[in-house]
Amino acid sequence: MRFTALLALLFVFACNSTSQSTVATSGDSATAVPDMPDYRYDPPAEAGAVVPIDTPDTYWKELLTDEEYNILREDGTERSFTSPLNDIKAAGVFACRACGLPLFDSSTKFESGTGWPSFYQPIDPAYVTEESDNRYGMQRTEVSCARCGGHQGHIFPDGPAPTGLRYCINGAALNFVPEADL
Picture 1 (tube, rainbow, N blue to C red):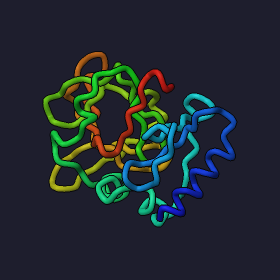
Picture 2 (picture 1 turned 90 degrees about the vertical axis):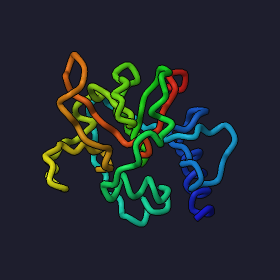
Picture 3 (picture 1 turned 60 degrees about the vertical axis):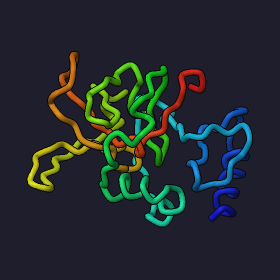
Picture 4 (picture 1 turned 180 degrees about the vertical axis):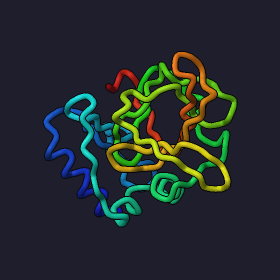
């Protein structure tokens, strides 16, 4: 697995003409490389233009930790108050942990008291998909990444102005990208 991760990193360096890669390692699932950020950030070439990807589960199983895979690929939910992203108040962007698509801006993050990172709107409505979720005897709206299909969380109609919505997102499904790195 480390060999595969190293090959992937070499490919990124070979294909990237800038000094900083837009794709990075995921915590303990890859070999650390100096000067590489510890997040994935890969915005679309054109704002609002998301091209869905169809990637096999074997790829995601190698890339993601067990918890990340459970949440992003199997629609799991992390325990509340366990994500360090819940406490981040710095300026930046929250991107899909699987594919790096920027989903939420920190300026739309708010303290919901639920124990999960909460936002009142995505960066661009085209960057997320919404689908009715009636599992477990509840009527909810599931939110997923529009590029890789990774489950992010759910939307509830109890958020602040201006939208009145609360995007309740699993922290393990996100990467935080500081404003200085954008």
